[in-house]
Length: 227
Length: 119
Image (cartoon, rainbow over all chains, first blue to last red; front, side, top):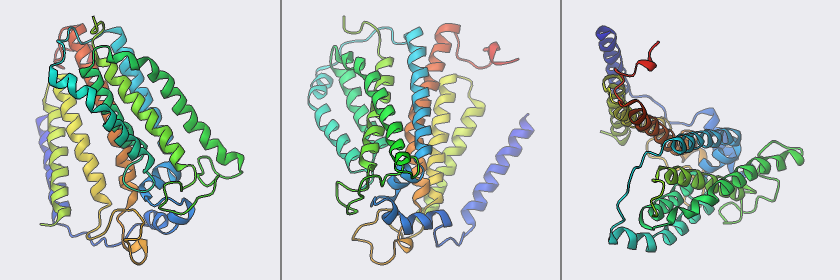
């Protein structure tokens, strides 16, 4: 067993050193990335090519990845509803409870900004949703009874997931591909209202990620903390 | 020492620490932490594969002069990692929940004593 491990470690280190001292002469994009870079702005109309890849070119993969996230959060909530792991909680300190009253609104606004500008600047549904979930964490930590919003999370989550899947069918109705974003006019790349239905799909992804991550955080909370 | 080398060293070191931790630690929570380290390193390595020296972020705007193809880095690994990070959070949370529940229900989180893991 030790011999195998030592051999694997030696292999890993030699791979590392080879990669470190090889001057890979890559000075150009690969064929796939080249296609995205050349046609992305005309096909998709999104200034941010990463969002174009996530939402349109690889939109079906993203639908699958959102499903992975959904499965993981469902498993966590199921396990924690069988056995609550938090036993007791002390009340939040003054600093935390004051912060939890002031900061969630700006954090929420920043998350919405990231989601809305996903096709223009680095951002989109996934990071924006994670930012909004951090506001939910602050509310859970600092506000007594803050867990009340968790009742609305399954509704928001299902609505967002359903609208993501249904928005994809819009392309099929127009006799193009599933999740094609150019079913409405693309607009001028770089404007806030542009890139077809990418902002709508980004919003759906953002709401879904935010509600799933917040539901995970709410599930970690002790039952009966409010009393 | 270019940026590319520094990022590669960071990524391979994190993956190495994570793999060693997964193989040698015996407590489930520590294995979960090592798994998180390894996945962070893997994300950095994936972004590194798309990096090209001296190029811009894959955002097409007025600041690029000339063809975008010669100006930007590869957007594909970045798109992959953006989703992988968020999914990684959920998977790590699931890992930790399983670890904590194992220690609460079975009384131990030591993988040597968990006979049900073996067949």
